[in-house]
Every structure is written in C-alpha cells, then in structure tokens.
Amino acid sequence: MRLNAWLARAGVASRRKADELIKAGRVTVNGEPGQLNTFVQRSDDVRLDGRPLAKQQLAYVLLHKPAGVVTTASDPQGRPTVVDLVELPIRVVPVGRLDADTTGALLLTNDGELAHRLAHPRYEIDKVYDVETWRQPTDVQLEELSRGVALEDGPTAPAEVRRIGGARLELTIHEGRNRQVRRMLEAVGHRVKTLHRSRYAHLTLEGLEPGAWRELEPSEVERLRAATRDS
Ligand code: URA
Picture 1 (spheres, protein in one colour):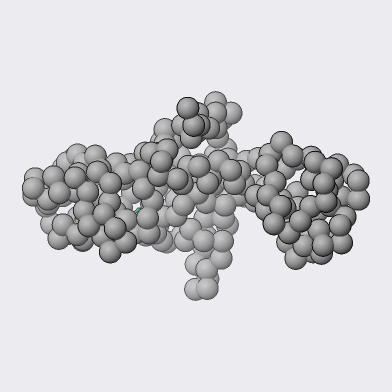
Picture 2 (spheres, protein in one colour; picture 1 turned 120 degrees about the vertical axis):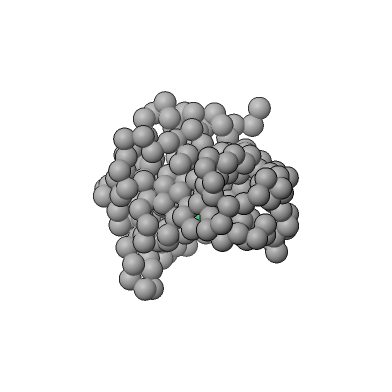
C-alpha cells in the first residue's frame, strides 16, 4: 500500500496531510526517507519524526450483502453502502464488487496485499453464484457457458455450470469482471432474474442473515493466504 494510504489507515493524518508530512521528510520507512511513491509492506518499519508507528491492525470481514446496497464507499444517489453496514472501528473496503441488486458473500478488508492477490485471476479464487433466469436455458446454452463466452472485453475463461432447477443454475467462475455473470448469460440469450453469490473462496454464508457480517477466524484468513501463495 502507498505510504500516504498507510499513514491514513494508521490514523496519523488524512492522505493529503500525510503527503505533506512525507514531502517535509518527516516520515521514514526502514530508516530511509519516505517518498510519495513509496510502497509499504506489512513488515516495514514506518516512523514519524523518528517515532515508530504502530503497524496497521488488519481486519477481515465476511458480509451477507443484501439487495439494494451498493459496493462503493459512497453513492451519489445516497443509497446505503456495504461499508455503512460493517460497524467496525477499523475501516475495511470490499474485495471486488457485487451489483446493487446482487446478494451474497462479500469479503471486506484493509489488507491491501491480500485483497490484490485475491482479485488476481491467476490464483483462481472460486466465486460461486446461484443464478435464476427468466426462461429456462437449454443444455446447449449451459455447454456454451462452461466453455467460456465472448464478451466485449474479451472471452471469459471456462466456467463450471450446474443446473439446480429449471431456470436455476450454479455458476462457478474465477474472474471478477464488471457484471460478468449477467453479461455471460446475456451472451447466450438470457436475462438474469436474481443473482446470489453463495460462496467466495471457501467462505459460505452459513449462519449469516442478509445484512449480517462477521470477522473471519485466523484459520480462515490463513486459508485465503495459502490460496494466493505462489508455490
Ligand atoms: N456478476 C454480475 O453480473 N454481477 C455481480 O454482482 C457479480 C457477478
């Protein structure tokens, strides 16, 4: 994470004020003067006027996102945001996004390193969606989905597709492009009626009502780290 963001998260100053402290040469990282483009890792020793600053406390939250709530930090239309729902003294931000009318599992964290890795398609993090369409897709259309479909921003990777009822499917993908599931269904001639993410990585919504959230157990965080480790 950038040094100014790190200082803001550590509660030292706003990002703008942090930039001023950096420019004034008052911040060091591992003994070297910090620069505006310095990138801070978790193990770095950051000091202000020679005083060590407490390392940022990391928080990891799983939210059962309800419909009608947006996945941005603020909404020009004044709709509630996922960040408003999570009442934690540490500010966490969503990893990826769900559309306002999509429900389901959403991870929020202030661990920028892990968030960045989880969002990278190379680690193939499972995103499992329950999809309901207005009409029943044919087996051939499900085949097309599973092979990957052409979207305007490029072809999608192969997906796992399972029919769970007439017009209800379970779709597992590893990418997280904007409105990807809706666009994939449109590419095979269907409009999505409801969309719910039932699992993110190994995290399911067991025990969480819509709108409820919980912090992850250390073992769950470790499992996410293991899933994004380069072997
Ligand atoms: N795909 C979509 O189309 N929307 C979401 O909210 C998530 C995945």
